[in-house]
Length: 609
Image (cartoon, rainbow, N blue to C red; front, side, top):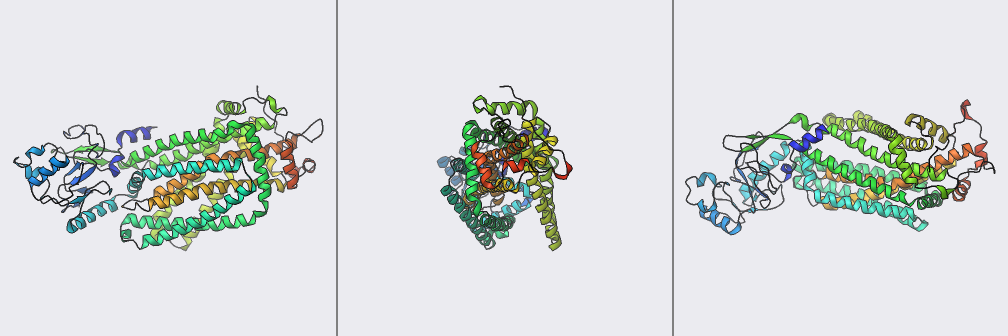
């Protein structure tokens, strides 16, 4: 809270892209006045472009350009050879090219006009969206201007270039986020009304999308390597990121194609499983709204997080010179607190997702463990009350474990970037093994957390006790049930890949046309991460219900034997699916106790209707 408050107060993300004049005004924005800066605080809403007095002789000293900069409404389209031409341009276009304190009627008769107006002749400029600067069209001036601007961009640290790319491509980021939401809704409807034809169409689209996106990434990498802008540092960073994305996408494509081929014979059983899940969801229709609420909360939090991130990169204090000129001195210590801010993003996002899982698990458990389903009243509200009164700590503990595993992965990525100059086969192999190990551990913890949340809603126990009890029960499950569970998880994962894949494809088409001086591949990576999280938020409904049903099934088998005195809680559809998969409850009930352990039995928690 302290870092967020300070960053939002001291930062100004608009300065990264929109630019600012020599008096502390951000172009294209309404500004607040600065102390001891008489020409600050002006309304620059209609003045969107930065104009330099001497654009043909720019130089950089200590990250500062040695020319007065102004915010203007339009750049001169033709060369202005005299003060009379500058005055006529201001009169006709309303764009004043001299200092703010000089009225355009005084351009030709004021004694300091030559000092307060741009160097003559003023070259013709073009108002292209290149950091919102007026770019001179004279070949000699353009070469000098471009070289200075390139040096400035290359000297700016990677963090600032990434933030600039995010701000420059904000419209594309918003549009792609909306696309991810739309695709996630389509996948929810597909799984809700699943059929054999829909599954085959869906798998075909996933295969096509994976192959096509991998090919496009390799083509873009080749195109960037032969682009003249490759000499710019941002161009090299974009090319290297594209190479990494292309390799990762190709590996994922090969692995998923192999798994799809191996699991092709289980499609019919998986469809039946999702039909059972859809039946339970139809009995509790408000479950469908839970991903929507979670998504809205995550959007609000992510917007706040991005605002704080952008503000961290521009936090600094204004330094006013004796002439009234303003320069911003960055505060390096606060700026690097974005690492701490990243920890908050991971932990808080996982906490919201954990709350959603507990609510869905609680509602599913309430419905499953009641013999008379008509007496189940408001299962979703009941699960919410259990979460807020008893299990917030459970959600915090589970999300902390996932965050604790992801932080070492992020640190490894950071050190890999630092050691890139000394890279060799040994370090590459070691880092990849560590990445793989942490990824597997994270996936295992995610499954453990889900089962722990379900067991906690059944028994009302703490996180660690619930995780232990759930693991003891699930280990005793027959292999058929585990295979069926894995097939369902894989199909849900393909749905997430479908959303991320087609969102990335849209991002490639959108960002590829805006390469100018921006690390646009990083916003694309953020969009892919966001798309996967959105898909996970929506499709985790089916995954959570599935895990909850199988754990409730294990509890049902432990506590009941199917006799008239102890009938099963499961309905006929689930029982038929289990029998068809090869697991018979009678044989499961009479299995021997393994390793001398005492049977673990979870009892449904008592609830007041």
